[in-house]
Image (cartoon, rainbow, N blue to C red; front, side, top):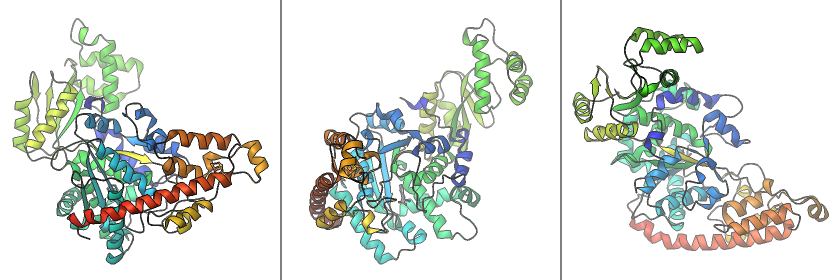
Length: 509
Ligand code: TRP
Ligand code: SF4
């Protein structure tokens, strides 16, 4: 898939309504609340996240978290897949150092490392400003935890020579970018997206623009498709970042049929009229009035009809339009020069008749970057499911028995798994008869999300044996507990080995 399949027209993308939806109905995505998601499908319909299944077949050798549906959703991940093919892609995620890194964070560490190993520029950051402002952690706690996150990320294979690790508080470039992005962000918008109100402190707001800067940071040197792997609670941030990426652009590329501006829906109507009346192959040029008549007979669309009638005898001609958003006069002039073929220059836009949409996007970005613009691509994202706590309910850093910390003593890890809630039946007899409920079993989740690793066969065997009644929970947990112990031993050994590497990096801890 290529760029012209993507709508960079984030304004026309109903972002306004998307953002507003954050506070609506029973499903809210709150980055600072305790998010559980009962029904992941709702995220598709209510927030416009797309199902990961729709791109899975385009991923070469997908990660097991993708294969098993743990990564369930995305926004424009296809753009990143294209970028990875040509070696132009980045991956970034951030971690609030509020407690020990646990097996839920491991999903994200793995996602970063996986993209890095496939050639993406990789970034891992410690969201210390956010932890301090939004969660009230003091700096000593933050420093300790920051170290632990980075060690685990390194132990899981992050290559710091190729990638970059940083903390928000010491990255001056990120803070400068945050300041610039803050100019494009107002408080009513933060209110709509995050439910901020008059009591919200300024530093909390600053942590939001800082996260926006984190997300766009990989594109500062050079714009490139970037994927942000996160839990769905972070989607409000992703939406805002996508919006800001568009707002920072010097140019916006859209399509048009005539000299006047039309909304995307109106454009579709004009397009339909034009095609039905013969399109390019029509003997005589199709006038705007003719399209108005055609639409009037079939649709109730007074606005577009009026625009078409006002344009009267102007022939309809499909074209790409470059709109001036924040371009300097120099940049605008340079763009005019750079457009090949027939073009028409207007006050705030240029229409080009011999240029594909794809070429137009590339050209606009090139000229923008040459004239000190950012040229940001809207960041893409992938979303993973939250892990269920070992004791049922949400996996939470503040409930030790609910999660396994990557720092847990391997024996404790073993014990926690053995003490976990299962999807088993009340008696062995019933289990043999009815089978277990693997889909609702935190232990099965451990296999699928972590313990089976790349071994699909193992994950499938556990599942099939469980629901088929051949597997009983005692043995199943014992096996999982052993695997967990082995994983923790191995991981902690690698953490120790990573100590030296961490010291050698210029992350201030
Ligand atoms: N807000 C994220 C969290 O709560 C942390 C974070 C900061 C982040 N900057 C980021 C996540 C950039 C992804 C990308 O965990
Ligand atoms: Fe869960 Fe295993 Fe019991 Fe099935 S057999 S319910 S997967 S613990």
